Image (cartoon, rainbow, N blue to C red):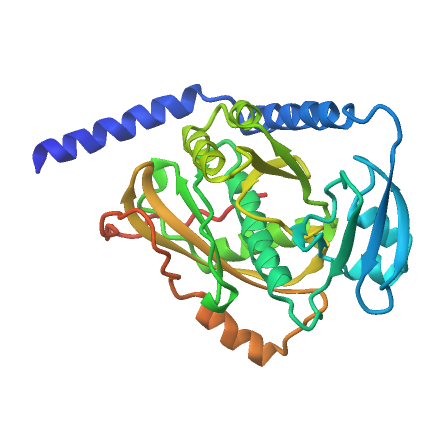
Amino acid sequence: MASRTVCRIFQRRFASAAAAQRPSLAEVRSQRNAVFSREQARQRALYPRIEKIEVSMQGPGLDGALLVMNKGMSTPLSCARHLTEHHVTNSALALVDGEPWPLHQPLTHSCSLTLLTFKDNDPTLVNEAYWRSCAALLGQVLETAFKDDYTVELLRTPEVPVLSGAFCCDVVLDPHLDSWTPSEESLRSLTRGAQQLIHQDLAWEPLEVAPSVALEAFSHSRCKQEEVEQKASQNPKGTVMLYRCGDHVLLSGGPLVARTGLCSQYEVTALHSLGQGSWGLHRRAQGLSLPLQLQAHHTVWRKLRQRAEKLVDVPGPEVAAPPSPPNSPQLPASH
């Protein structure tokens, strides 16, 4: 028992020393952005001459409509702009030849295209992408919440169904915060951070890349590098999908919706301790959101929020039982 305690103390001191040598958050973000922009420019340069493709629009009132677009340049959103303002503002995702396709991802061949909204008869794909996007937004807020005062390591985002009641983002905070229990004000601060990003109406820019590019982008995170290798091994094409939202670059296991402005009601509801794991004390941040096209009365929202506070159980690597230290002084997240 004593040796285990000494080992844990040593690990924490080592982690703190390593954190002190890490570049600042601004430097890490700048490096990831540079890699993303460079690869994005390289891929766009693959189409030096304008080639035309035919896009057959599918959906209510659109069957038979044919658009002539630019190969490797035009996106589903570009197609929406040739239709109506309704299609531009309400489309969240697309189907290209029946496959989910991000609204900002260039089209590379003649295809059929369906624009998806939250009010479709079957909104399953859009709802899944929305839940995933809300979790991505939560991770973006968490990464910057403590500025350079404490390290934050975003773990692999668990895929949870909408019926689970809350979207999730797993994270490891600086070891100095292991005994910290966030207050309601801390959660409200995280919520305000998310709402600021929603108000900016930022695009989620997709970029499919080779593992080597993603590994370079996440060269400061061993956790993310492992995730890159895992996702690449599971993808038949051997690639991984990056997204950029503002200056935040992330990995995603599936398509995200077009922009942060599609979120409306959004609240961070809980930060649960999961116990010691591979990277330290694993925590699960949770939240609740509804899109712009769907609103809930405050009494309904309150009931949904109570459910979203409860820990969402996600099958995954086993972790030790959460410790029960006394609460440390509250540390509201800062922005």
